Amino acid sequence: MGWVQGDADSRQEAIEDVLRNAFSNFIEKREVDVIVFSSMTAFDLANAIVNHPLILKSLLAACNIAARAVERDLSIKNLDTYNPRLSEDQIKVIAGYIKPFLPSYLEIPTLSRIDRVAFIDKEIRKVKGRWEKKILESLNRFGMLQFRKRMFVAEGEQFELDAASPESGGVKVGIDIKRIEARRDIHKRCDEIVNKADKVKSSFPGSKFGVVVYYPFIEEHINIQNRLRSDNIDGIVFASETKESIEHAVRLLLSTLGVSKK
Image (cartoon, rainbow, N blue to C red; front, side, top):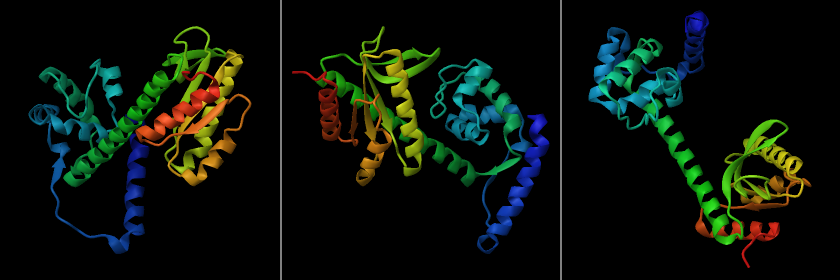
């Protein structure tokens, strides 16, 4: 961290000055509880985590350290940062690892807000995962083929299909399951879908490629369809998060691709 510390310190000072100037009419002085990390040792930090493991996520997030970094650098695998189950020795190692990255102090409301933002992001990703799982379950329920998430190789690169059949070998049917949560993401996500379709068809010329899209702005679905217009995409359907919408969309896509149950 030392090689960027000077630039980071300069930027922090500049940002603090700019924030004070930008919001000068809305700044109030308030008395809040502050955790002074500069006054504690790594052992003090470790003891706090041992006695209150719930604080680990906010501390890691304040340092911009994810579980995968802990696994990579400390060989501590499968760390649930929200409900950690760690030995005292592991916690001591983590405390020593993150202590240099912590600021001199942080206000408790700021630290709790950091945890809140991370928690909301996790829950949103969990919902996305459940939606994709429901799509896959419906494909297997109403289709004549069995679909699985799988990898394939195109032009020397590996790509992932959210649902494909068969599970190995040449792809006969590939399906991209995509959530587009915001208008600003349309171009990027649609380009990803078209690129995936191109890769599938170039590697498996006789295959079929379909798309299931979640996009909450129903009146703009035509925009998505226009951007996904490609000879390599054989079917496009839209599904919300309800069971009825998912099943209707999946049945329609399977029928379009010619692989629905009779």
